[in-house]
Image 1 (cartoon, rainbow over the protein chains, first blue to last red):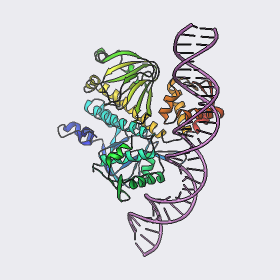
Image 2 (tube, chains in turn green, red, brown, purple):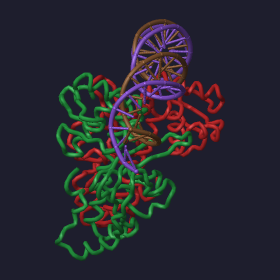
Image 3 (cartoon, chains in turn red, purple, blue, yellow):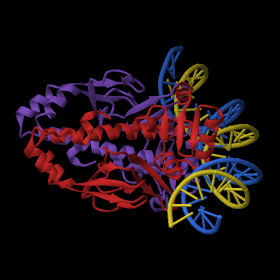
Length: 216
Length: 216
DNA sequence: CGGCAATTTGAAGGCAGTCAATTAAAGTGG
DNA sequence: CCACTTTAATTGACTGCCTTCAAATTGCCG
């Protein structure tokens, strides 16, 4: 993610704007794993900035299933898309979340182009991710898992090393797979010596090139 | 789609702004079905306003397959997401398309909050659609087809009547299905008397309620 | 160390894909 | 307007990937 999208984009140079933005904030508030931050159907009064931990946005189905649309890491803004809260926002791990009043942010954006363009950059960035994600959902289980692991590795910033912060169930629901298929796919990658595992949630990429070939 | 997102949002009341925007435009240019408007990998110098016909954005896979990420109807803006043109933009039917210089639009947005917020509304709207689409891709073939037909019906504005403007192949690639599965699914809906067909591409919804139940 | 939750593994079944052939529709030239 | 060609869509038989259901194993936390 470009630096401009990080929360620190509005710097020390503009106390007035900084104050105005600060006035919109509440928190950070702490959530324990699986706690709901905003409920599907709620009024979308706030958007959320992840301070620590991992947050997921989910859509629940009538039949009991669910889809995890996205994971958000520290520095990411959540809840932008759902102006009517079409998704529930939940803590995927223990997490600290800053609340930002949507209406206030919008009214600042209405006369501050820099804020408007900042939000535009965020929305565009999320749109790009959502489209990539949608395309990924049309591909094979192996391709989905590899892409997810590779992307997560990049986002977490440790090259060739991934410590999965969320459960296999969350990942499976994100990839449109069952936990069984996810587990089997990871085992298969391990047996092919493309990845290795220190423990269940600690993975090492052994052959990044070969992995990337498999996503094509 | 909210009225504010339509291209006519900047009205007669502001000749200067209107002129500035007009100066960014080229066209409308005519494209025949299957012609490429912008190629995957191109610099994204323009964004596009569909004037008539249907436009699709596609991602091609190395193995020869492709995914149709979205269809765009008259009044829709295309090519917003791909700042680096990660998708190709093509005419799904004969179409007229207006070209708008991206850089110029962005520089206007940098000091015109109304333009910035207009773009923000478009991006947010597209983000919502992309997320809904991604979730849809995790569901069954029947659910995907029903949702697609229902949504298209709404977008085309003829209640309970759909004249498919694009080929089954395009629809199948959009839904992550094969044309065979798409065909079988439609036939099945027809046999269940949920829809009827005047001809291959002319459909009538016979039981909207029952259809909507099946998407849950 | 015990108990619960998370993950893995196995066996069987179903949904969607593949391959192939037929039918329907649309375009072309006489 | 009709015969012909080409493209698009349908249908059938079979395969395979992923799911489902069930049981065993691992890991975590008190």
